[in-house]
Length: 106
Image (cartoon, rainbow, N blue to C red; front, side):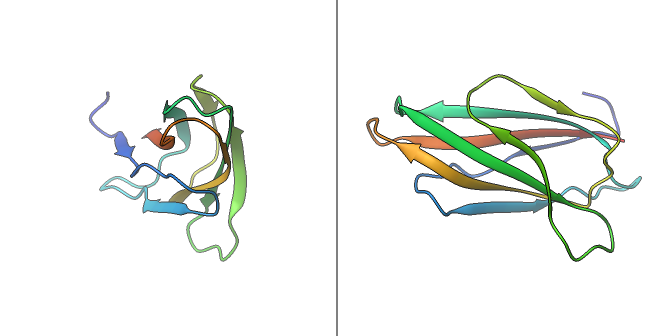
């Protein structure tokens, strides 16, 4: 991880409709390159997490990605001030949870 990067481990979500939101701002500005990954526990049969970002000074959230498995996803050239994950689908499994891991780099 570089000196000017930011890592966020969002709290685990365990029910659809829940949202976890964080600021991505750090001392040197806003990240514009993003790595996203889900940690999925409890063996759910279906998962979807909609990841949204908000530009500095903007009122509207934009969809950056929809994640459905634990494979990393990469987004470039999108300087965002806030990031959030909205749990859209979480079915079956034994006490399933989904956690978003985020790494942002300027």
